[in-house]
Length: 63
Image 1 (spheres, helix red, strand yellow):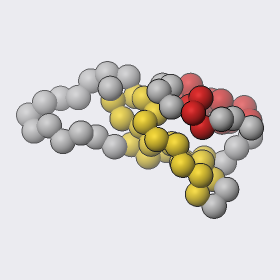
Image 2 (spheres, rainbow, N blue to C red):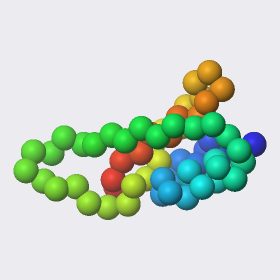
Image 3 (cartoon, rainbow, N blue to C red):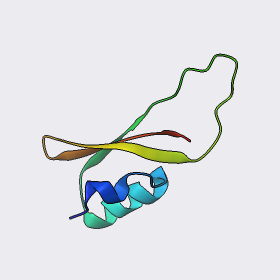
């Protein structure tokens, strides 16, 4: 079983791959910062990990 703290700060692709390897059920939730007129760039990074009814939810954004 993965420690949720280990997933924080990881790129979303790597975190999802780890959860798949572990055989865990998960969902992805993307959030964006509202910055009118600015195009967001950067790595898609896990910023929150929650367990909801036995399912892991990863929230990520571009940092």
